[in-house]
Image 1 (cartoon, rainbow, N blue to C red):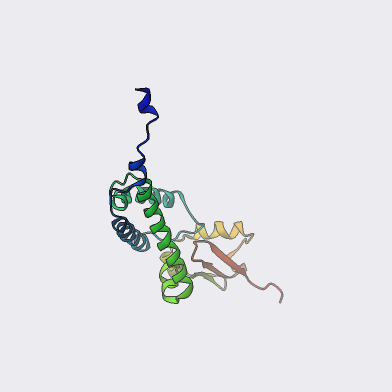
Image 2: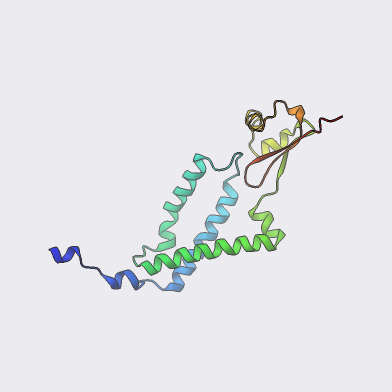
Length: 169
């Protein structure tokens, strides 16, 4: 019995049960399925990552796990999957840097929310930003009134940037 506590199955740890190519194909397919679904379903939110964003990522990871792994057991299989996901992530970053078409797909353009002290209601609705939420962000930047803002934009990372009006006249 004591011998079983210290016994290690080295074969199961280092020898994959599945083909390495199968693992790469599974990882690739699942990676792109998740990327496309997230682009279609999840909208950027002002202020960065929220609780629901984290929940969505955790749930997707849990649900997608079997599709990635086919219940892998060896360390090699896990390493192949991690390497595949990181490789595609780096490739997409590189392509986004090199190609405007990829950049527009993976990094949304900034959207103007205030222009010359006036709220742009259509753009705010499209980005799901309420007036109260926008006012909160303004106060955090030390801006008391909308009339002080020349432009406010929802940036690709979900943050809202403000450009104040020139008060020297």
